[in-house]
Image (tube, rainbow, N blue to C red; front, side, top):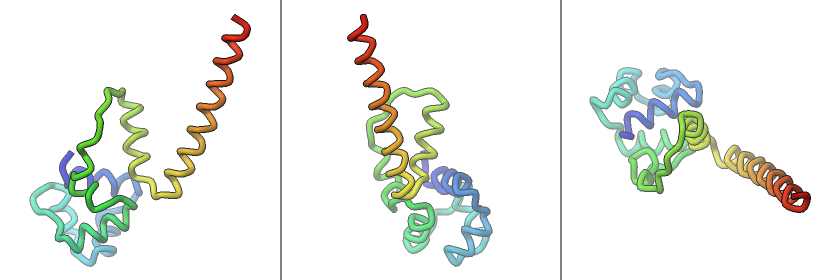
Length: 117
């Protein structure tokens, strides 16, 4: 995924308009459109502001963190991952807590099956 795709995807996931992003970063809407189309890249100052706005690192926006393990997943899993990456730290901790609770519930259910079976 290129920087323009990340910028667009994050904006949409946060339900922001290009105007909202332009006002936050101090640029024109045309600049935001250019970033999202890939015809121009944001300045480093804009990247820093975008990372704060979206709650992601500048490295993520630039694709530095993209070299992570890629596991095959279906469309629903990919959408969940995309949504998760758009969360701020609080949102990510809430999701982690819910996942831990659900994993414990499933583990307990499996243990009961083993005892009965």
